[in-house]
Length: 189
Image 1 (cartoon, one colour):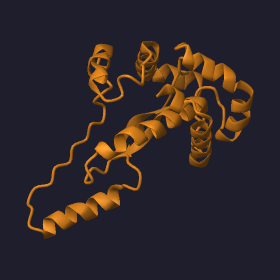
Image 2 (cartoon, helix red, strand yellow):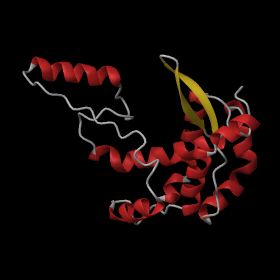
Image 3 (cartoon, helix red, strand yellow):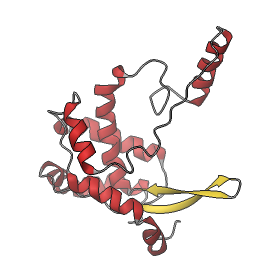
């Protein structure tokens, strides 16, 4: 699967999506408008690092955002290059896993949103159903040790196609918990 992720058309689509989404700069300060030029200059180095399993994502910028009622939550902002790679992986995972989801699953899926979920729930209520279950896996993988991923991923249908680099998993966890330090060094713009 990694070759599908790194295929030119997939990477091009990922570039366009990241540029379309815009978003804040990560710890390196690169803006989404600079992504295409950066890829043009550094693409072969990045892809080589991925193919040799030596690519390590950059630190994540931690920014506190208001949640309501005076509360805040920590938002992790990856660098633009890491978002590009995440988008490329996401596009390929969608191809392989989208059809496994139930039609009534609305979380983070193409052409699905909260409004459609509410309309579906309203339809169930109007049909006489009394209970609606909302399950949120937010944070589920945040506290799972690396062996959890190593144990359960091989049982998935992608086990022969996608290798997880342990350095990438450990790096993302370490950076998530050190975001306060990163926030002080790299203030949000």
